[in-house]
Amino acid sequence: PNPWRDRRYLAYTASEAVLFLDDSVFKVGLPLWAVTATSTPHQLVPLLLVLNNLLVVLFQVPFARFGATPHTARTSLWPLAAAFLAGGAALAASAVGAPWFAATTLVLAATAFTVAEMLHATISWELSVVLAPSTAQGAYLGVHGLAQAVQRSVGPLAVTAAIAAGPLGWLGLGAGLAAMCGAQRHLVRDRGDGALSVAPVTVSEH
Image (spheres, rainbow, N blue to C red):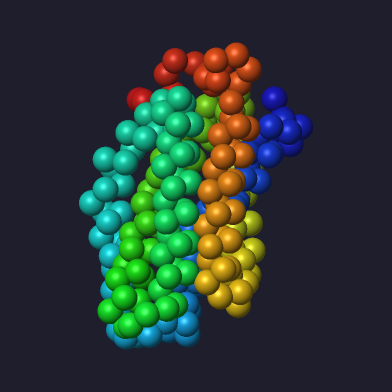
């Protein structure tokens, strides 16, 4: 099997490049937005990054259950969409109101995008493995790895565009990421009952 001839897997990888945008949101978008478009004290920005790291340390392993099986991973795309929507809405709301309100909504946004990060990490691993033929998983996962590389190149431009567009930009980004979750869920659906046609045991279950 050749991953470059597998249109379904290439489309899945392209959707992954979009869903990995949470990385650019934390590294570029959230800090710039907080200091240029909100009234929150600038000292809060590094604390938001600490919050992200702390939540990942505490909850990334428990969140692995959302990718325990292909069906669970596919179903978990809905809460992932909700997390992206909530994060975009919170960032949009942070531009208005008093400093305390901006700080509160920024904390909510950081929490929502961290939840999205953890959910997507476990969903992405499970689906990237089960969609690959067992005889060519290395080649397929190599192609899947390009999604993060593309995101690192294009992601800063996307979140900068959202900043330039103001609150509507963040709403649009959150809605776009949520829509991509829906598109990916449809993409990984098989004909019939909607379950993925994969072996009963996958890498995440070892």
